[in-house]
Image 1 (spheres, rainbow, N blue to C red):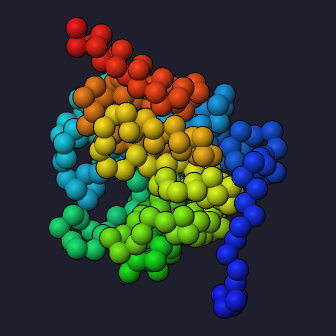
Image 2: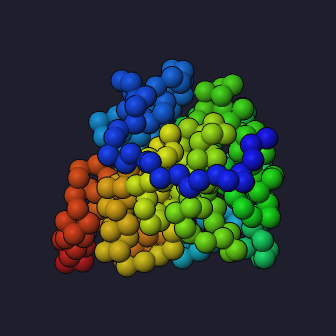
Length: 296
């Protein structure tokens, strides 16, 4: 086993040099994958831009109904057309997402505790691979706690998903979870994202942090940045802009879209940043224009 005594901190991230093994495929680190994996990744990441707008509505699996998610059956139809990928649980997707939408699905495949627990870090893979196949999932999402009490079982869960996904050509998205005892530092995200990539996940969902460019450069698979807690629309669009400028391949927003004053305008504005090169200010102006038209 490698000894970490005497290790030097990494410093040569070559942020300005593109990923060297891209090949002709538009998803980072995926050029050597099989056709089925590439097909599913192409549903998640737009082949024209190589990026994605994910809509996360999986909060109910541990929080129950929250503001904006009281009626999934009413919310999702308003937003689905402007998302590249829908991230939810099998129950929510089957009950509230019409199969005719034909959208990429990031299937929440891990669970283990509820908001009533003090520690949410003990999750395992609870969805069978057969379920992911039956639901035509484009990816399986596994929550992984690095440096938390539940690290061992969540690492085992993400490796289980990678093993099964590799057998049936379904990508795994490793979701970096930040426990209450962990700090959102560059050093932590360098560790967590790289660990998940080396376990074999094809996508890593993480948080934006200081020196995000280093984190993106050091991770050999695409990073999708989580929206996190609700912030003002302008700030959420700045987060999306900085993430994309820093090397992220997309964003996965939930509360900053469905708890927005105008969710439809907000997801469209996020799409302008991710796919059309808008700055955060341009996207916010777009959001205001659409919102004013809607209100009037």
